[in-house]
Amino acid sequence: MSTPRTSGRRALRLAATLTASALSITMLAACGSSGSSDAAPASDGKPVNITFWGWAKGTKEVVDAFNASHKDVQVTFEQIPSGVAGGYAKISDASKAGNAPDLFNVEYGALPDFVSQGAVQDITKLVSADLKKKYLPQAVQQTTLATAQWGLPLDVAPQAFFYRKDLFDKAGITAPPKTWDEYRADALKLKAADPNARIGTFFPDDPGTFEALSWQNGAHWFTAQGDTWSVDIDEPETKRVTDYWQQLISDDLVRVQPSFSQPWTASLQKGETAGYLGAAWGGGVLKSTLATTPDASGKWAVAPVPTWDGKPASGMLGGTTFAVSKNSKKAKAAVEFATWATTTPEGIQARIASGTSSMFPADPDLVPTAKAAFNTDFYGGQDIYSVFIDASKSIRDGWTWGPTMGITNNAMKDAFGKVTQGGTLQAGVEAAQQGTTAELKNRGLKVAQ
Image (tube, rainbow, N blue to C red):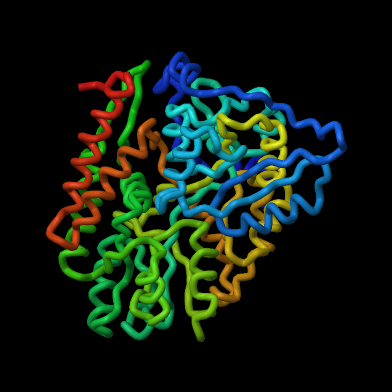
């Protein structure tokens, strides 16, 4: 399927914009860093070598393809845990110790936090207007703060629902749920057909899914006017999501397991979990997770995420950028690699052809490349990218990430982790509200009362 740039830019309305006024230019100038961008080959003719940390599926293949086709720059890659699984802590610790890599991956939601910590460089001078035009404007906005460019966008992540067709058929479910009421009804049917079957999983360690669901419902956790933040994590739109999932958990209609953990994988392998609420990149994750499971291929399908009224609506779950660390003296070379990885057919082809990634490129011209490279046999030959394209059109406007998402997420994780021992999701929301407000004040930012 061909996706012209003009229509792609109109269609893919990614509204998780980072409000420039929310972080003052003065603060960013103090916290951020503009290191040396020397990337010329060494005088002995040897290539410039940069270090890169990341966790996204297919990244090693991208690095290998770049190194094979470039002489002046070479990349040494280290696979680290995902951000929520310890990757962000590792990056932060390395930054504080002065030994961070030249380049690392960071999700859109975490980028403002790393900027405010002074862990990344301002790469504005290395990002030309022509390069910015290659990306969706909304994706560029997510990597821009106070008029400065702090990273390059790799992908965007509209929500999607992955489900086992055969298990749904067995339970008499003829179509995937279009509404959250239908999702609950289908959960009851699945459990009635097989007492061990559940429709999905609540991940207590990953607030990202909960945030995407709140975003889908029209929540606005952070807004800014001038240099003042408003924090409304516990607003009614969030409470609707909280109450709904609390009831699913209380009624034992979904599992509560750590994200992408061995228990979660085992439940998928045994056919005890029939669905997964993920994002565009989840297609590759699910496929690779079940690659060695007998007869899994062909049984899974992809559908739009359920909504409250049946009309298309999506949040965004994840989405990755490339950021240059404050410690790097090779910013130009780091940006050269990041540019190649995010804006060339070769870079996208290498990632998707690995079979482990189904990410949706931030450069809309490369969506056809991604679609052609991803083998959909696991999904019975379904055109899963058409689902992602439609989902991207329904991403709700108005969501802004806050500058202390590390604190926000940790507060929620701590409380969500107690939900199977009598804790509540609402306690996590309230803890995030209180912890975030306190941290903003602690960092010297104004907070509306």
